[in-house]
Length: 213
Image (cartoon, rainbow, N blue to C red; front, top):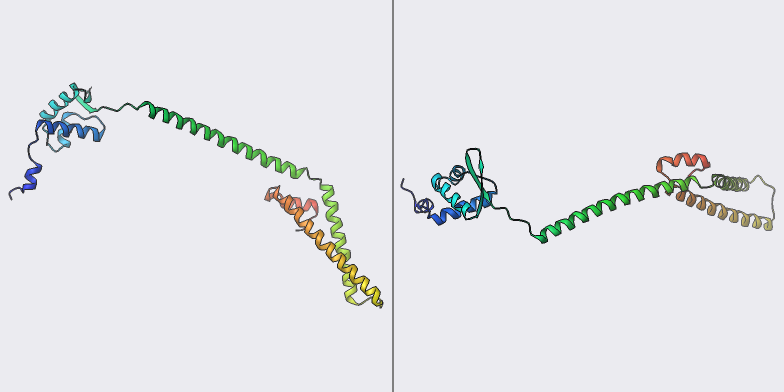
């Protein structure tokens, strides 16, 4: 079958200028060294080996490409652009910023570690004897109030006058409020202790304080 117009157009012979532009463009796109044989083959022989060798030599002499010996053949590659001063300056600034950020991260991690250690030390320095005394007192008051309430509710008491009953009710309300308030204080105290200590140590601290939460 005869070649189409499109195929004939693709295979049209290149002018020296077109061949030189094709070779130079190929070297720039690939950005690696090639011999004349490699370039001719990779361009599907649009540029013959002999023509590629001559074009590469001319481009090298005009300092449009770089060339060097590689064994028994010459290889050529596109000229690498030198980084401009602004680019180098920006790279140096980025390196300096990266170093600064890394040092800042290390410093923050060290500070975090020290703060955690300080919190643990602060928890250990809480006067345990005072905490135990406060908890024991609260438990005793709660126990006494509960016992009195149960006794009153059971009916195993001598008849009392209206005035005495009113006094007892007032006393009961008073102690109920006290127990509730102190229970709240105890819970808040434990929350503060728990916030300053490791979770794995909570059970041991509860036992040392005789505290049930």
